[in-house]
Image 1 (spheres, helix red, strand yellow):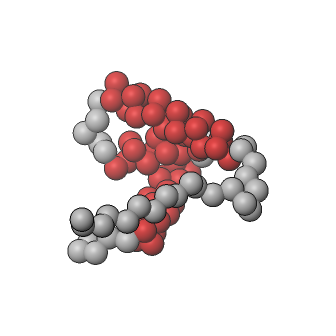
Image 2 (image 1 turned 60 degrees about the vertical axis):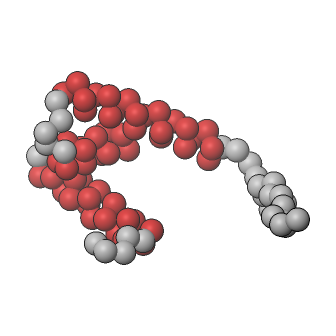
Image 3 (image 1 turned 45 degrees about the vertical axis):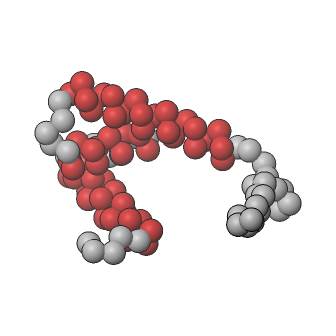
Length: 92
């Protein structure tokens, strides 16, 4: 992958999710939540991690999903935008 783009990242994430969900579905037990599905992806992709490391990753996933939920619940109006300030760098 010589030129990584956002589109390729999303495609790779979709393929990884589909393969992880397919693997858990073959095991007869679909993931009950998003954090379990993402943890299944981590288990498939990073087989060298210990159980303690996977639990640490799972806590991080849960924290990120919680933060995403908080951000999702913030109501923004069309007029809300980041404050940007332009300062010209002029040589004197």
